[in-house]
Amino acid sequence: MKRAGLLVNPVSGKSSGKGLSLIAMLRSNAAVSSRVLEKFEQLPGILDEFASDGVTDLFISSGDGTVHAIQTELAERKPFKVAPRLCVLPHGTTNMTAADLGFRFKNLQAQADYIACLEVRQMRDRPTLRIVNPADGRARHGMCLGTGAASEATLFCQRAFNAKGVKGNWATFATLASAAGRTMFTKPNPHDVTRFDRPFPIEITSDGKTFCTGTQLLMLSTTLEKLVMGARPFWGQKLGPIRTSVFPYPVPSISRWLLPVMYGGTNRKVPHGALSFSSSRLEITCPAIYVIDGEFFEGPQSEPLKVETGPAFTYLCG
Image 1 (cartoon, rainbow, N blue to C red):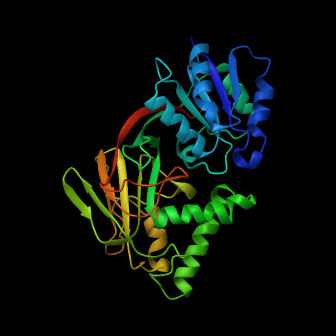
Image 2: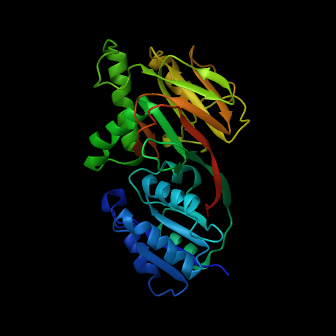
Image 3: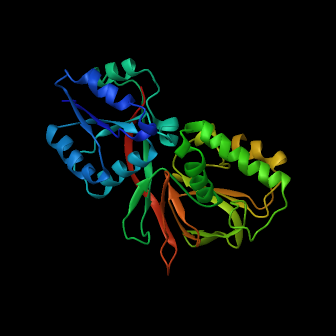
């Protein structure tokens, strides 16, 4: 028998109030279990309560960071006998996962009606990325991993724009415009640590094959089909669940390559040194900080960071 659970992180989206409004709309429905996540330490207990209630479909009102934490709990601790189907509601500051796998109706009444009746019409299955050996020893599950300029740009976006209430694609566009402008109109300076368009030593191997080594601009790995602003910075055949792209340093011409790299087709032309491949696992060596779904962590000190395909979850999209 189906039962919906609604988990709301009230501070997502700079306290937009959407999740709490949704709880109020469903308060009289005894078939829906609702919980508010006041602090992340409560998450294991809340998921245990949902499992005890018999929740089969978990609706998440939050940003990418909370979704990432829930995926990790479900995959690593397994509080449910059968993993619930997930529905990502785009209520957070950053919603890259929701842009690809989230519920397609933004209207709160439509969301409430769907949660109440659970008339499923569209679903997608997608595996996570499992970060095996971060420095703190806590395995993580998420959908998009980056390092080099990718993690530096994410940190800049959170501090310069998200913290001031600018969110979603607007924050991403502002970050991209800022980086592109600095790259195009100022001389490169590989020693300026205030810039994220600088060289990072990145080496990536998979199944014994070395894909890149030396200085690069950034790397991205994901199981999503599209990223922020609908970008698809991946090309070639998809032969594995994890798609990885690496972009070279020095930075190629922004005016020439930005749009083709972000939105080109499978056989697009790319700048010299850029590469894209797919696999089920990979190992990354880079001294820079890593970011997965907006959350930062350090890699191991004496070995490469190991990334593998995690479990597949089913996402309710509408």
